Length: 134
Image (cartoon, rainbow, N blue to C red):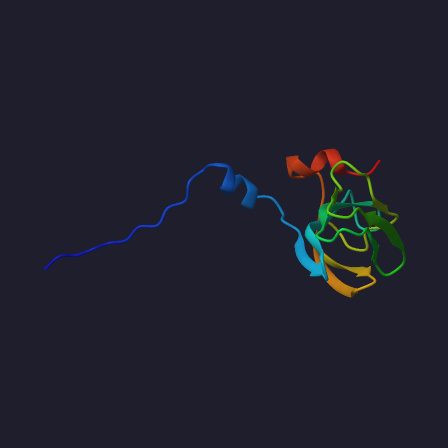
């Protein structure tokens, strides 16, 4: 009788390093893809930077509003283009929740709206430290 043992292992390469950081929420509104949306803040109630990438799959620009309980910010995503918020600072005056929590943001376009349940992170993880609001 033969005994077969299957062993599963994980490499320690980039995939694991990526998974060790907080990955944001992904949703779509019509032809607009919202990828890896999250908030970076120093503390509950402090200013928060929105991170993520918004990809427009149409030829026309799409107006996008991102809001929480007490404020909103507006962006226009160019036709067949994208906006990466790691290079475009987009802030909310307050984070709403403390680092380690998840909070709800609402993304709205002319095609409708979606709730994003986004992680709230701080500078504890090195990849997010440069994005802490002043």
